[in-house]
Amino acid sequence: MPFDWHADPITAHTPLDKNYRSTQNVRRFLAEQCRADVKLTRDFMAWIRSGEPQTMGDVAAEWTRRHGQG
Image: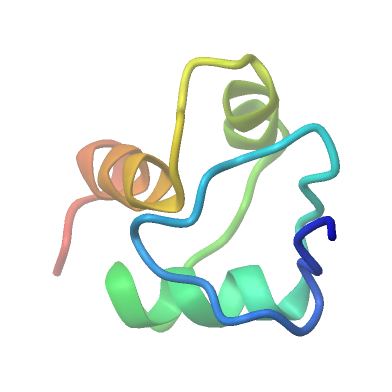
């Protein structure tokens, strides 16, 4: 059964797949992992879809690298 990006629990180990969607569920995960005011820019979304990140933990780590934790 494919991962439901709208409803399934997301953890740092959740793998990205071809069905990835930038949902409120994804934004909640990133707000918890990074900062409450996390924003997903077009550039960052292109990076996510590039095939480089493997997991949502990779996505959170890259967002933090680009924008800082504080």
